[in-house]
Structure formats: C-alpha cells, structure tokens
Length: 484
Image (tube, rainbow, N blue to C red; front, side, top):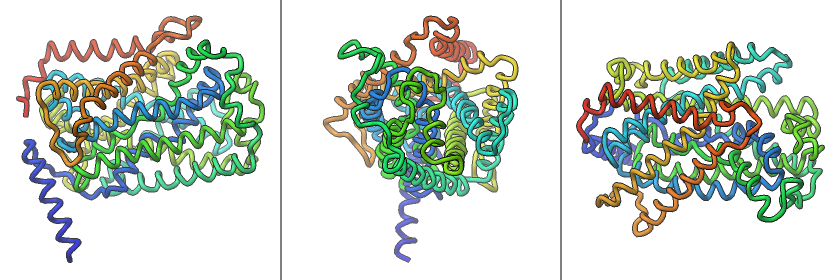
C-alpha cells in the first residue's frame, strides 16, 4: 500500500513538472529505471559496435587502438554529464529537440532535430545492413549482396512491428537484449581470455608498422573512430522521458550507467578479441577481412561461433528497437509543436498502445528506403550511411553548445541532477572534446578513393544541413511555436 502511494506521488510530481513545461502527456509511464537504462545500453550496443568496426580499427591503428576506448569514453562521459543536467530540468520526450528549444530557441531546436532525425534514420539502416551478414552466417547461407539488403529490410520490418506493440514490449525487449548482450559479452570475452588467448598483452603497446612515438599519433587518432561508434546511445534514455517515472532523477543516472556498463563491455570485448586473434599480421594487413569471425571460429569452433552469432543477432535486433524508439519520439515531439510537415499525422498517440504509431511507421519506412538504395547504387548507400555517426555527434554538440549559450545568458540548472560549480568547466571540456571528435570524423584520409567516398561525411553533412536550412528559410516552421 505504501509503495503504491509513493508511486502515485512520483507520477503526480512528474505530471506537474511536465505541465510547468507546457505539456500534458498521454504516454504510459511504465518504463522502470532498469528498463530505461537497458534502452540506452542496447542503443549503444557494445557487441554491435565492436563487431561492426573491429576490422577497420585494427587495419587503421593496430592493436594499440584499444586505448581509444578509455579516451573516447572519458570524452563522452563529459557530454553525458551535460545531457544529464539538461534532461533533469527538461524531462520531455524527443530529447535533443526539446532541450535545444529551451536552451537556445526555435531555429536552433529545429536544426538540431533535423540533423538528429536523419542521423537516426541512417543509423537504423546501417545497423540493419550490418546485422544482415551475421544472420546469413547463422542460418548457413551465403546470399548475394542484393539479398542481404532484403534481410536488412526484413529486420527493420520486424523491429517496427515489435515497437508498434507498445512501451511495455519495448521495455521488456530492451531488458532482454541488455541481459543477453551483457552476459554474452562477459561469457564470450571470458572464454576467449581463458581458453582462446594467443597474443601477449604487450601487443596493446605495439604500434607495428604504423609508426613509433609521435609518428604513431595520426594512425591512433584515425583508429579512434571505432571507439566513437561505441559511445553514443545514452541520449536515448532521455528520448522516452515521458514514459519513465521520476524521469528528472532517474534518467541522468541511467545515462551515466550506459557509459559505465556499455563502455566497459565494449572495452572488454575488444580486449578479448585482440588477445585471441590467431593470425595478427593478416588481420592488420586486411588479408583477413573478418578477424572477428576467424577469431571466434578458431577459439570456439563452428557450434560455439553460431551460439555467439545468435546472441549477436539479439543485440542487433534490440539495438534496432531502441534506435527506432528514439527516432519516433523525436518525430512525435517535433510534430507536437507543429515544427515539421505532416505534423497532424505524427503528433498523436495510439489510443490502445499509447505510442506514436505514425511516427514509428515513418521511422521504419525511411530507413527501409535508405537501405534499399543499395540494390542499385551500393556506393551511394554507403555514402549516405556514413552520415550516421557524424550526424549524431553534430546533434550532440548542438546540445552542448546550447547549454553553454544558456549558461552565458544566465541559465541556472534546477533539476534533480546539477553539476553545480563544475557545470561551466565540464560544459567547456565537453565542447572541446566534441568539436575535436567531429573534426576527426570528417577528416579525409582515404585519398586514393573516389572523392565522394573520401569526403562522404562532409558531403552528407553538408546536404543534410543545407536542406534543413533551406526548409527553415522557405517554410519557416519555427513560427508555428512560440518558445515555451
């Protein structure tokens, strides 16, 4: 009885805080703290992150690229602290958009949502395309590239259908995905380190042919892109703020835990793979194009490898679910303020499941279209998907810059989680780190590749930003809302 009364009081406080921000929520606040954390963890998905880019990182910087997981994790932790302070005061669905709206204003918020939305769409397509080959290996079929795209489309359809079932199913699947992925990472990593270890720990300090001392720094920085791919997703905890009880207090904590646990799991998996590679020179040179598969098969045999791939597929599916949930809540929040074309279609919730039904549909259809481009233009779809990571980081920095701007204008955070006297310092560190990360990601390095591949991140970022600015200039969607 006492517990029920406490829950009622918390819900009343959540409702009053949201009403003070100008909203009345119809979402079902049924996502517990652990389920909210699981959503962020499965979006970050250490297994998906490491397995997807391990070969690239090894070929770019050798085994010493391992140390990037600590450095990038620290940088993203500062960004996470800034996000936690903002969401604590503004626990509104859609995350980045409503935060930027209140920190800066309508135009800044509109552009942040535009960039973040397209980053999420391309990330969904990219994760599905990255998971399709693993599904092919699991069922033992070596299909063509075109059929692999159909597998990716099928995965997006499945995740969309599951998301349409409501917040409760989303929360449960996120929790199951978290447990499977974390247990899988610990068991597989532990098995490799105990029974499959071949390489000495000293390889983590060996720069091989990538240069010595300061000469190694360019390769080390280039290989850091892999770690950057593994350290976002914590913002998804805030995207479902109106579905989480005691959001002002719970979400900053779940964001930080996502960094701790997700980053720790990614680092552990990377370490285990590095020390268990059967032929390190071939993996570094690229002769072994898939060192993850060769390592797992060598250490665990075909049966063990397929069991691992089964866990990996759960990770990919739960990651897709979390990404779509974030995208749909962003679109809903965007449309609720009349800030996007078709707002009347996307600003309502399903009466039965209490989820943004139409926003979820569009969060499935657009990624399906992006993935399907590969049927005709494989280079084009790769170029588009290259925007996935850089778009997320740009959107992150729009929040960090917005927070710094608001502080300069006199903003005094007053949520349940505040950084106090360290707020400005942490904010500046997060900005410096974020700008360096964006510069690192767009820096052209594959000079022997065609220009549209070498400059793909600059190209896609420019297109998204310019089209957003053009729409903002012509349609003036920001006039549909006065700053709340």
